Length: 384
Ligand SMILES: *Cc1c(COP(=O)(O)O)cnc(C)c1O
Image 1 (cartoon, rainbow, N blue to C red):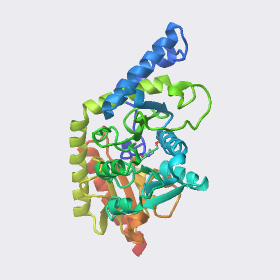
Image 2: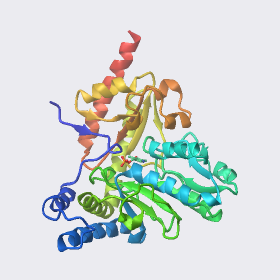
Image 3: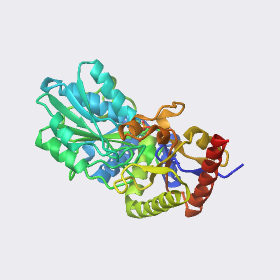
Image 4: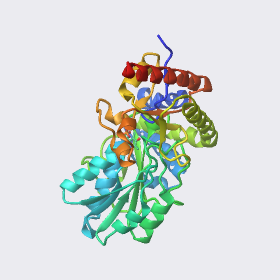
């Protein structure tokens, strides 16, 4: 068996030892329901509130602006539907982009079926949203702009500060899906005029099944799940205390190591991109060259079937992703690759390599060697 070399950190990450260690007591001894009045419950509640403080510190907001959820997808649903329903009396128009995660795109589609009107903004060849089109799309019925912070496939970081300014100027609510950004780059919701933001713990070395939503005080949003009064009556259901504690620890570690982590990933990313471009002919790097997530390399190999390449890589222990983890089994180019206008002979051969904490230069060299070997082999097979 080959050692696993994991290059799919945008799909999910391992859980850090320190994170898991903090979580374990909340399953075994400190298992109280945080709504209970006795000590066991109060201690669970205290741990949950401590985690809320850590999450709030990371993005520079007040802890009472953080709502814990079950994942990034739920945070997007709660934010977009919740804001749309609560502000319907002002208008029914929402602006988003063509490259959002399905948690946003499909939420917008549902709202379209319910009578909302949605504009899907174009992006340029690097995946940057068209700000002029954003400004021109705004009407007196527009209530919400939802644009992702950083793209999960091609890694492009959007001009969030400009979008925040435009939204503020036009009195619109601005939500951002920051699931790929939190833990990877510094995010300050105050500085960037962000009204609402989604994140997910399993994208930054925390557990799966726990997310958070920030909504600025004063922004109206409706709950979308009925039940108890947890999370200031915005998200019913007994809280995932252990998961929340893990999320708090994970975000604390991420924030404390952000500069170092960024530096390491950027170095490996640039090395990987340069070596791929130097050693393998007919390749194209997708996404913005500099405004991109530190660990993201999205590369298209002309005349290659990405799934075939992935299976070959998997056979020697390499984990990577074809375009997007959400489109496994789907042979069509992803909506993101379509939106950046990638030619078909390239888009079919698109690999997403996302670097993370445990990757070393030796891992990257192993990846490079085998990438070249399999791409050459697959291209030869095609000719013969
Ligand atoms: C992973 C991801 C999500 C979904 O998060 P889950 O916690 O898996 O539901 C949403 N948006 C983006 C950009 C993501 O990368």
